[in-house]
Amino acid sequence: MKTDHFHNKVVIITGSGQGIGKRTAEMLAKRGAKVVINSRHQEKVTSVVETINNGGGNAIGLSGDVSSYHFCCELRDFTLSHFGRIDYLINNAALASKGGILDTEPHLFTEVYKVNVFGGLNAAKAVVEELIKTKGGILFISSLAGVIGLPSYFLYSSTKSAVATIAESLSNELYDEGVFVGVHIPGFTENDPDKNIMLPNGETVVLPKRTNVKVLSRDTTVKRIILQLEKRKFRSYSSFSGYFLEYLYRLSPPLSLLFIRMNRQRIMISDTFAAHPIYQRKNRKK
Ligand SMILES: NC(=O)c1ccc[n+]([C@@H]2O[C@H](COP(=O)([O-])OP(=O)(O)OC[C@H]3O[C@@H](n4cnc5c(N)ncnc54)[C@H](OP(=O)(O)O)[C@@H]3O)[C@@H](O)[C@H]2O)c1
Image 1 (cartoon, rainbow, N blue to C red):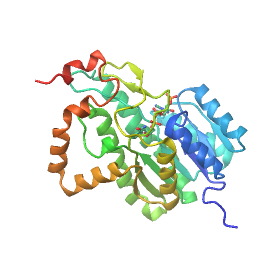
Image 2 (cartoon, rainbow, N blue to C red; image 1 turned 90 degrees about the vertical axis):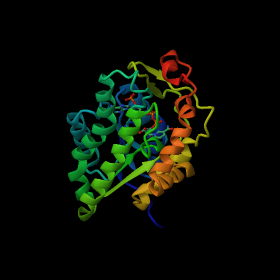
Image 3 (cartoon, rainbow, N blue to C red; image 1 turned 90 degrees about the horizontal axis):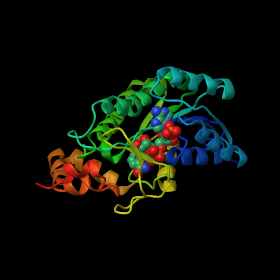
Image 4 (cartoon, helix red, strand yellow; image 1 turned 60 degrees about the vertical axis):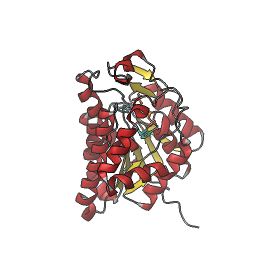
């Protein structure tokens, strides 16, 4: 009988205390992977580890912040001390943020970049030598918002675009070492009930269930992430709209910008919490 590709593979998934990361860990564990759970909150990590282990899987977890390179080295050493090797890193941890340049507090620039960009770089740097030994791989989770800069999402969009570029560089740089590097572009995916979004004043609020856009189920997105990892495909999308937007952008950047410009008001008020007073100034039509 053919052994599952992920059987006994050791996979670190950052930001796996909830949402897409958590579901990815659960599905990989079902396929025989040894999974390493991480997020900043210990109680979330413990809960995911327990759920997986009670279901017959093999999980360990370490809470901490991937924006610290020192923590990423601890995460690597913790994984090696328990499982002895590292096959894959999924750079999934991220902060969602929304707000225009007029309203956003400058200290948030650093805060969002520290997690969304430096977090992925820190984790990649910490484990890359281990991945060379196992001929493993790194998957960066980007976003549709990273394909083209969206109004009111300049911070989030730019970090997700950076993530895709980092993946492109590393995929070529590590090619001769036999290390796979890819980028996944999820479409709008069903929120975890605990998913937070950062307002331009730095306050975090729970992102309500999205009702005004078509959302993918978490399982749909996660199955595509896992398939991409298994097939070692550089770029993959969980929705057709992601594929379409990227295709349009590559075909004609000016046309894509025009498309976004024509839909700017709709994008800026697209979230169910857009009525929050903090967004009223920039949402006002002239
Ligand atoms: N959901 C969507 O519609 C969608 C669409 C496009 C792209 N994405 C991308 O897909 C990924 C997962 O999204 P999601 O919706 O599942 O997000 P989520 O529900 O907000 O989960 C994010 C996870 O990251 C952890 N995290 C945040 N900052 C961290 C840090 N500094 N260090 C370690 N862990 C950290 C959070 O837990 P703690 O708070 O405990 O740290 C949480 O477990 C993200 O990269 C996101 O940008 C999502």
